Amino acid sequence: MRLIFFSFLIAAGAWAQIKAPTDAASLQAGMKSYQFHCAFCHGKGDDGFAANLVSPNLVHAPTDSSLLNIIRNGIIGTDMPPALGMSEEEMLQVAGYVRSLGRSAPTSIAGNAAKGKAIYMGKGGCANCHMLEGAGGRMGPDLTQIGAMRSPSNLRSSIVSPSAAMVGGWTMVHVSLKNGTKVNGIRLNEDNFYISLRDGKGKIQTLAKSDATNIVRDVTKSSMPSYEKVLSTEELDDLIAYLFSLRGAM
Image (cartoon, rainbow, N blue to C red):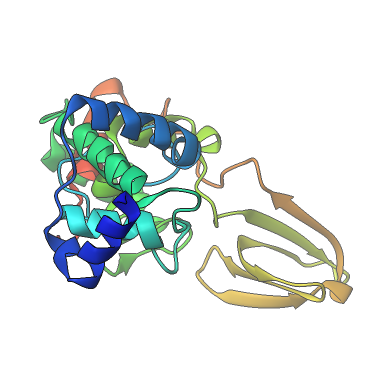
């Protein structure tokens, strides 16, 4: 009966007006479904390798209807898959639980974002590897919306222990060629015959595996160095405050 009801709402265009539940029973049920279906990637909401959900403003889901749509259909072109094995009611309960995480989001964090920006552009050298609003390096993830995607604790882990908080799609590859040349870079694509990578100068190189004597893939080691001993505790707080403030075009 519930499935027929939800199907009717979708067909009637009322899906966009559905509100995620806030009652205790629904949130409890949503938490259980979340733990089974979502926690592997999102963790507790702010400590996984997927998008941070402990936020009152989710970039891709500003409304309950858009959040439900993402749970139901995933996000094309990303690692977010469509829901499998969840009923319409369970998806609605998960949406309610995710919204409850946002209501517990911290309203402020330690650190000075203005000082953090100076560290980002200067001492930290972050712009050499990371893109921000179309400018910067391309050896690391684009940080334009990083504050909406990662929690302060997750950002700290990425800066202090990069290899322990690696982001998929940024594997460093070291290729030794038969002519004695060594090429290092971020792997972009690979098949049985060729491997493409972006080197430290941003140049894309496609190498034939038949020309290589050895190919090493650092799947467990980040190319980003640890800043634990590079920045002071106050500087780390400032840099994290700046990164957390980056929300892109909302």
